[in-house]
Length: 276
Image (cartoon, rainbow, N blue to C red; front, side, top):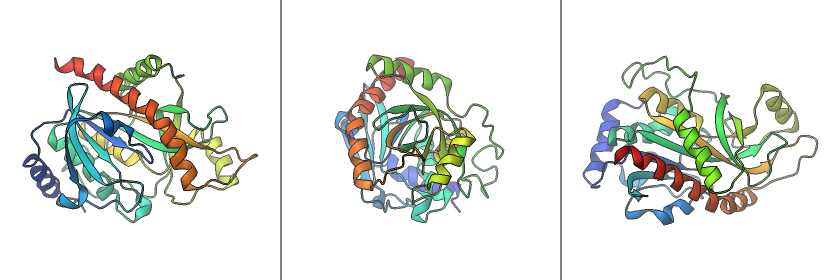
């Protein structure tokens, strides 16, 4: 169980090693790293250095925090997240969000690679999450009580409308069609069967992935304004299902990553206006 003292210990270590107070936190999903090329005055701290932090076990998640500036605004970028399928608890998975809040973030931008259940979604599409279906077997709020905030977190509007509007503006600015969808979060790490894709579609899910929702829940508990974007890396049509492998997913994510980075940069530039 993660305690508030552990969160503060992690945050204290970081504040002793950085000179900024980030306003925006960004979590980069599978195969999404191009944004790091735009960060100025970088300070990189690996997860292994930070007290109480888990270590990313997925080879394509680098496992480091990058502090610096984007569009003149102080940010912290999480390059590599944690997943339930790695064996971590939900509290461990969401520890970085609690630590980033302790450091001062007010906004959280989440990204992920996802399978496209909606037949209108194609490989490489970028989709703004407008809602989610949580099918994970545990909850990051279980057992933590009221120490970090209200235990019974309202989820009637989990994705901040102001951030979603900023994302829509950024899509238009980059000449990318605005697509929105419902994200279903599953445990993984295996992909789904034909029957499971059919069932997921029947629930109203447009895309499926193995992350993001735990971080989003904790962000809402902490009062952080959050939004998420998915890169569709494979098409999950149960009537025309093709085998996929992780290398292909990484390749598709990498191609979309350049556009996603520009979108995030434009969102941060809009947020910067709040701090002039």
